[in-house]
Amino acid sequence: MIEPFRVAVPQAALDDLAGRLARTRWPDEIDGAGWDYGFPLARLKELAERWRTGYDWRAHEARLNELPHFTTEIDGQRLHFVHVRSARPNALPLILTHGWPGSFLEFLDVIGPLSRDFHLVVPSIPGYGFSGPTHERGWDVGRVARAWAELMRRLGYERYGAQGGDFGSGISLALGAAAPDRVVGVHVNYLPTPPDPEADVTLSASDEARLDQVRRLMANRPPYQALQAATPQTLGYALTDSPVGQLAWIAERFAHWTDPRSPVDDDRLLTDVSLYWLTATAASSARLHRESARRSEACPVPVGVAVFPRDITRSVRPLAELRYDIRHWSEHERGGHFAAMEVPEPFAADVREFFLGLTGGRCAGLTPACLRPEDVQTSHPE
Image (cartoon, rainbow, N blue to C red; front, side, top):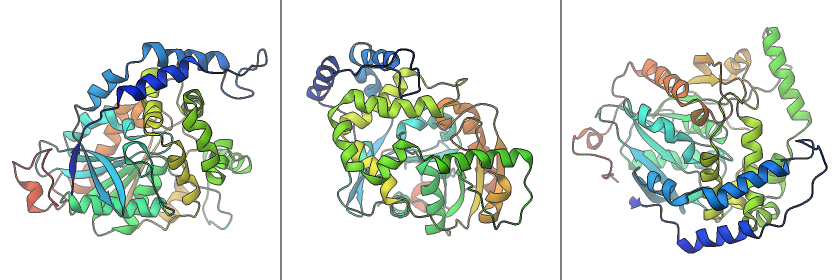
């Protein structure tokens, strides 16, 4: 069963958040430390004070409720998703998947532009936000992908595309592997291409520089990744009890992974952090790092790649082509890891170019229910 959902955080939860922020016990900081020891104290105090006194969750909640939200249960897990149908009845459906420490909020600025050409399904990963928490082991990238396939089936979509970044990239590629007869293509804005000493390819100096960056990252695993992969429960106690702890944990990733030329607005950042805090999903979202340690199987459907200059790593095309059927490759001038938030217009244009190029703008094969004019946003065939 698919049911309408409305975002409605109890006022008691917002009052508790304000009280905890007011009672924050701050650590000291070495003079002139900057970023050498972690997130700078002055900047975090600035964000925390904005969160406590200037940020208005209710205003952002009202804007979220302008979108059609739904929930359903798949494989014993509650799933939340936004479903926006295009005015074009024969539009190609797309499922857009976020990553960590993002959320479905990453796509807010591209829903409007993309819905002119596509039916959009924007779910929250199990364990994240309104899809959280998870209650059992095994919710890895592959299992999420299989849940997405079932979700799209329930919505009546026989053929569709998938897009994602961060974990959303892995989930989208796994969806292509799990349902190759249904997925017309996968577009990603993050595609790790680790060094492969056995690969018989010629690399440019630019490609070698990108691989050097990957080698440095592999040799010095980021602390957040190591902790979430090893002890997400232990970490969850701190982040679920301290809003400033949750703020610092997420804000540090946004600071390091965004392009300084396309920063994410403080209120958009605080909305994302609030979603983690208000749903108490710090631990369950972190578990995806532990569950998804193994490498996923190859994706047999056409793949499009958008590379943004300030991402964690930048993909190397000759290596990507050894594993995937690359049909589209773009190198962008601005943007980082959260491309849909940072540079929504180039992001949306890239997604549109790839999928319309695959289908020629034609219907990709919907069930009759999806082609009815009266089948609008609030109607979902089982």
